[in-house]
Image (cartoon, rainbow, N blue to C red; front, side, top):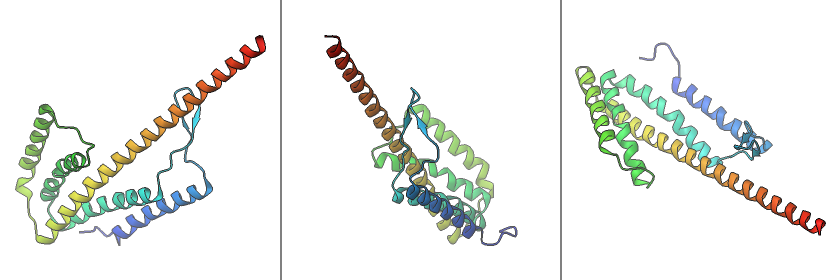
Length: 189
């Protein structure tokens, strides 16, 4: 059931393709979207992730909602909700496998179990599925989990680069202050 929309997946991918093209134009013109300032107000160089990372993120960002919509076309809303519940454990598994995740403590694990049971109870009466819908829902879980871990990784990289840039900036300022103090000392004597 597409509700009259023609080629919704194609339009989604075209929108994200325009984002990639804009990013490439921005890289070639060497401009930043917005300047980034550190705590002291000094402007930091903008963080530009590699093109390969941006393209992968854009494709994952476009594919995840497209697969979610396709899952709704083939499955009932209840089955789609149940498949979405699998995304959180998938993210935790991927993060732990990559060495970035933290062990789940008992309260967090217990709250996840309660949420999953609640979604199951609310959705179990509306579960109808078929082979194609099940495969699309499984693909949606995998792509969505990968999409969220990729964004998390990109965010961690950007934060680490900005911190390193800030540290280098502070070291340069300290060095400049030390040099000025040495010059003053030479001039005074």
